[in-house]
Amino acid sequence: MKISIVSSSTRRGRISHRIALALEQAIHEKGHQAEVIDLAELALPPFEERFALLENPSAELQDLNQKLIATEAFIFLSPEYNGAISSGLKNFIDLFAKDPFSAKPIGVATGSTGAMGGVRAAYQLQQNILTINAFPHPRMLMVGKMDQVLDEKGRVVEPSYGRSQDGFLTAFLDFAQRLSS
Image (cartoon, rainbow, N blue to C red):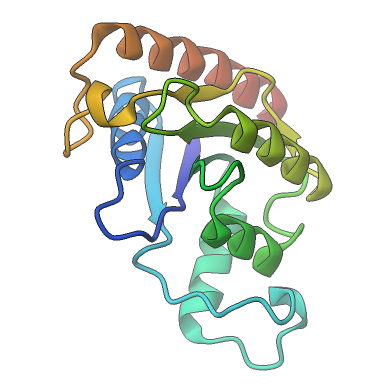
């Protein structure tokens, strides 16, 4: 199965990207293809219109759209900023809208340096996923104290987090495979 992890923090010194790196490695270990789509590396335009209605989308946007269409399942990862998902992720969702996501499974992962792990952003993100005609997995990965459970390279340094991530991925991959077949 081909899974894209959308890492949405574009902030300098970001910590949540560690979660994307950890998920990517764990998905590979479970025998699936995984790729991180790092919004910090993309020059997405501010939302003016959905991709399908853009008159002259750049080659970069066209390539990204094709990559999204080829993806079988997604994990949307967002830090919690002021009780909400990152503006970069909202822009990404609005730009590509429904076409590449429709009828596909999407997992929710959020993180914060506080204990709650981005719970408000997680619930908001599940609602956004429903509006793009995708299937949000009911189990979410909410990573509290993300600066303490993963190192800079996405290696797990807190065993309880490793168990939580594994439980999330096992359930999500089962869900995604059932929807794909």
